[in-house]
Length: 300
Image (cartoon, rainbow, N blue to C red; front, side, top):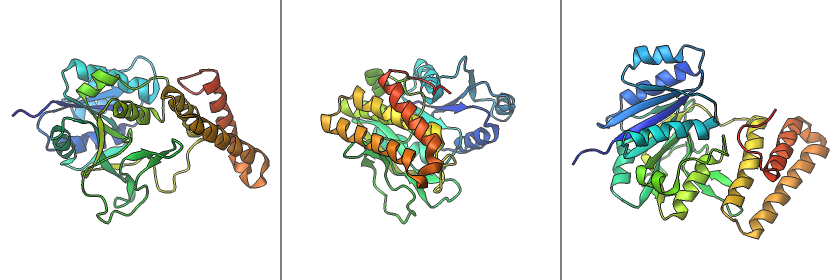
């Protein structure tokens, strides 16, 4: 039986060294039927030339405009489908994969036709034994939560298991899922888009599975990570968009708005949260942009 065609899509924006390290780890992977595509977002750091020199077999697509994680990756996803990919792996450029990561994920996905989305066990790059995410769940009030975040890996996650969503730093999607539920919703631009994609697949009967034997390391988030105000903006607006898009029950709406308003007031009036003023403004902007249906990139 021939191995299904896997195409990896990587978005690069002036991250030459990270992208080269990621591509080197992909070159060491043992999966036999694999192509790689780099989507370059107007890089000026010599990324394109370096990739062409070091990895001439990698396809490079020059993006015409910046549509964020969602829209930019959709360009690559569509091109992967046009090349008859059976699986599409959307991968961050600041990741490094174990040599058997791809084959472990494909093996699990191919063994169960109901599995539509697969993700690896992701570790912190700078603390390689600490887990960053073992997949994600939606909390009682639709909070987006990483499983096992910042836990030391002591073998507590071994068997593949169904989760609600897979982190967008490395998400493997079956072609049939994309054809059935569509690509990433470009309104999100950045943040929550992978959660909503997985939720959409799950609501259409597909399993979303984390595979602990497939290991990957991600540079983007450290254990002491302090998100920028822009993350507060996208997290606010896009969580509300997800709740709206999927017709969440009234109790979810009430709890979410109460939580947002309580946080807004706390960051405005309590002296100990004076450092949160930029986040307060981003939170307010996210709430207002949701109400006015302003999507895409955050306006500054």
